[in-house]
Structures are given as C-alpha cells and as structure tokens.
Image 1 (cartoon, rainbow, N blue to C red):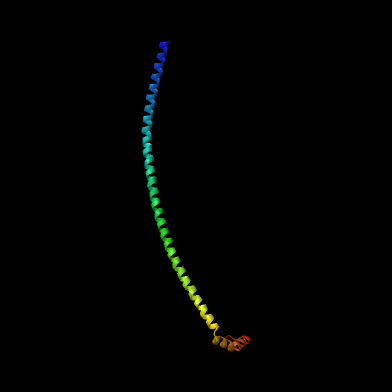
Image 2: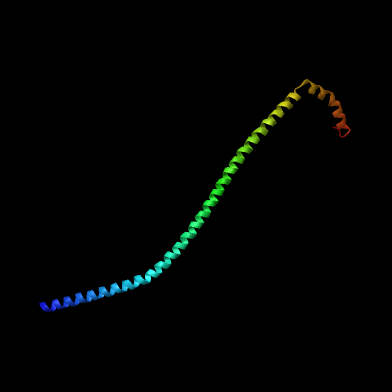
Length: 129
C-alpha cells in the first residue's frame, strides 16, 4: 500500500506539471494574441490623446480670446462710465444755469409782461412762438 500511494502521488505530480506546462503555453499564446490587440488599443488611445490635446489647445485659445474680450469690455465699460459721469455733470450745470435764469428778475419781468399775449394766442387758437 505504501508503494501504491507513492505511485499515485507521482502520477498526480506529473499530471500537475503537465497541466502547468500546458497552462503556461496557453498563457504565452494568449499574451501573443493580446499583444497585437494591446498594440492596436495603444495606437487608438494615442490617437484619442492627440485629438484631446488638440481640443484642449483649441479650448485654451477660445478661453484666451474670451479673456481678451472681457478685458476689452471692462475697459469700454470704464470709459462709458466716465462719459456718463461727464454727461451727468453737464446736465447738472445746465439745470443750475436754468435755475439762475428762471430766478432772475429779468426773466420774471419778461414772463409777467408776455402773459397777456400768451392768453390771447391761446384764446384765439393762434399758433405762436
């Protein structure tokens, strides 16, 4: 019995070694096939990477153009605000001048003397200045 167990063990070891060898051969063949597929995948990935780089570069250019436009708009906005402030100041000066004119004795006297003329023009519906 003891001898028979040794023989069974030897057969099992031999079978295991043969199976391991066959597995190794199959793995090598599989790796060879996978190598071609991997090369193709690598090439496709490189092309995708190149396309992505180009897309990124285009996006960077668009971003720079947008930044330039923002800076330009900001400068234009500042200029328009300055012009608005000048226009407001001019309007205020004109109002002040008009107030001075309307408060003057000359204007009040002229307005008082011309009141009857305006009433007559209005009553007779005569267009006048």
